[in-house]
View 1 (tube, each protein chain N blue to C red):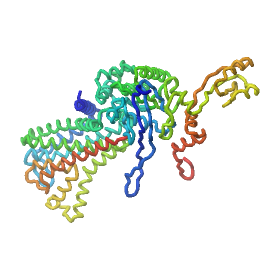
View 2 (view 1 turned 180 degrees about the vertical axis):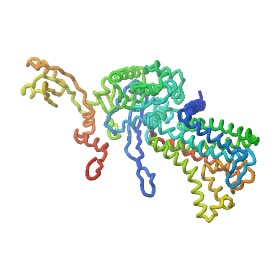
View 3 (view 1 turned 135 degrees about the horizontal axis):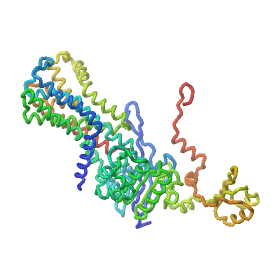
View 4 (view 1 turned 90 degrees about the horizontal axis):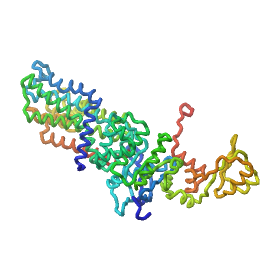
Length: 276
Length: 336
């Protein structure tokens, strides 16, 4: 068996273990509530949204429902991967793993692919279910290309959070620190980022109170490139009409590539230097 | 040893990076304790006992030999070829000190996973299980394993891919005497098949009747390596004999013996004398002494260390204590 085949075999085995873990069983109802549940809610014809927004097509409904991915999907990714390394370190298994001849780069890829796969598969299935629900309920069927971009972008944000959690897990000496670090990062990008954006905007003299102010939208759009959740929304917005937040599709894709490559590199570098 | 050398480590070293924060660089690190300039040649089928006190650098050295820690300097050769770290890992099987295997995974699943990591067949994983005596338990979950079985599983994983060197870090910790005996027999049979074994321990007695050579490590330096006899001779050790007698030996006789130690308990007297006084036994029996023990005793770790470092027992003990001592905290003027 070639080293690549062995790597895929290990990643598949790890993913399967995590997919059928108790932790996943606990998170599945949350994912169900947040992903298809949100899609169901936002596809209601009589829905009352702030600022009198009315979604006019399936892609817009799914964009609104993407909050489920931002809140539940990313949290699930963090909870799945937060002890990916720290658990083995505490038990001594990490020492056994690191003494094996498979290179640390490949072992790192196994960890990323295995953990990411275990959360990506159920979320992708739930997203397909959500899109079907939106089409079934409102007769606003989503074009194939929009569906593809939506799923790819969602998989990417899950990948980013998985790598963050694994990175935290590799730094933490025990599981408590690993979960604190991972959840802290999730909290920062998911909840505190709005505060951070607003604060910076106010300091720059932008009309913070007016969410329709173009200056604020552009400022927020640009600052969002520094947040994984923001980049995720930029990627989704590339398929929406009439959205201008001062960031072109090119910059959204470039930021997505950077958010993929930089944490990947940081994690692999960390793993290469890891002392059990 | 020459042709029989399985692996040779030349001047290898590694120092741990420890946190040394400053106000302008909170992540700053500096080099701390470690292992420096160790030369070690491992012969085929040889069992080396790596001994040293706590903090001597045994685990660090074993991790370097296993390719877990990078070599900051020095090189590793096998059959005249310099090995890189991946090649080193493929030739060495490592068993860390007490791995707490726990999950709902079965032994077989775990072995299969490590067989993929090691790059060997699933069949060889089952063969390893057979060697360590876990084949009948391969459907047991890791959660259900006793400490002895966990140690066996760790050994089974270390044996995957038939390594030429087996590195065992304190393998007897947490094992009962029966398990230790079985484990020692297993290790001897592996050595007879040509696998070289390095075992670390801070108890020389644990390694009795198992090891071929002793490597003495102290403060990150390999002080000596050789057979027990050679080591004793090179360190200027006299062989010692322990005598247990029911009554005190007469003064006139004591003057002819070179007594190194005398301890009196309620019912017997314990003497440690220099070996090579076989005629003494007959004299003692003739003088109506009931001798319950007459045996040659091996030097203890502390004696070997004292001989190798030239330090006395009190100062070497203090040094070890100081390196591991946790400072006392005082709360409200009272020591905690």
